Length: 303
Image: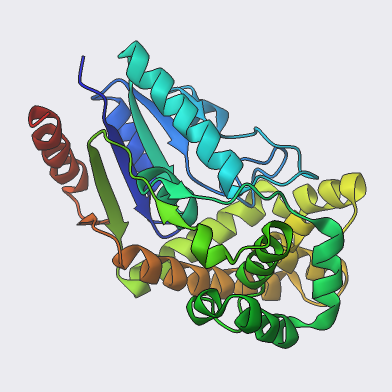
């Protein structure tokens, strides 16, 4: 039994975070908490590279398949569920919580204790703002919350809408409501990184595997069930296949697009994670497990 603590494994997509967590689970009694913004949704399996049933049987997994595809998992809701699970694991002292994923904001919500304004998505307000266009929305944000507008890229529609939403609902700028309250328990933050060329090869291999597993059929089923305008179907991997089903691309072109877009996404992830105080490891090092294990042992022995 160890004192309350948290192990985090973060990094870009396709760096092998799930595999590493399962290897560690063979040496430690771990409970794995997913930190991936799409794994929370049921039925989105192949295109999200969701851990298989066999993989999940190797250690308890949480925060996977907890949301219906037509609902929205907010960062605040994710944070609350993750914090509750971590506390339960700390209280039981039976397993160590291990937060694993590539959604930086989800990880930050837990590791940094982000103070998130309790404002749920406002569909009507968002619809009105979207009709104005991103340029006008960002200009509006500069008026109501110049601090937030300086932090948010003019082309970042998601964060722009959220900042405006919070400002209009609460009457206070988002920048004044944000803060951090880090948890008191020790945290070991492990990061997996990869050479860009090697990572592109991994992404290409994984994309080919997804298509061979039946990604197109998965998208067809989801379209039949929820309609092609479901927001989740516009995300990476799914949106490109929608283009194929609409006759816009060949299957070979779809594969190339998914690889291209995933590489671009991975680049943004790497940029985000590099700003964090993380113990970095080469994702493809032959001795990766031994290196990480030594770091984990040092961390646990210091508690």
